[in-house]
Length: 103
Image 1 (cartoon, rainbow, N blue to C red):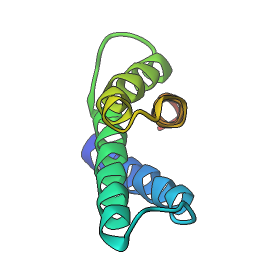
Image 2: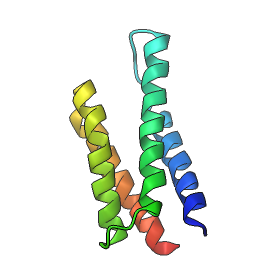
Image 3: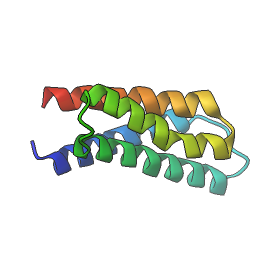
Image 4: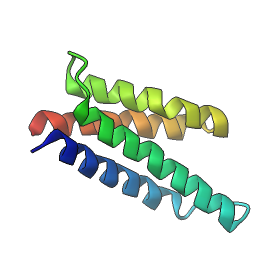
């Protein structure tokens, strides 16, 4: 499969999964909920898109873990919600790296 298409697919799936996790959460108002969900989708889409298209010369699972970790840090620092954001990014990145090894 073309790496661009794989990245688009991984980004969409990872972004949608993150939206599903966030939907039941409580927010102060509808605007902030929409902003948080949109931001999370874009963040996770970027992780999913970049991993298949990035060659660091190391195992793709480790590449995915590192990309997920690094790209999740700004959101975690801004929101001050560290473990769920960084953990989901790192684990999701590693899973996407594993998918890359299968294709």
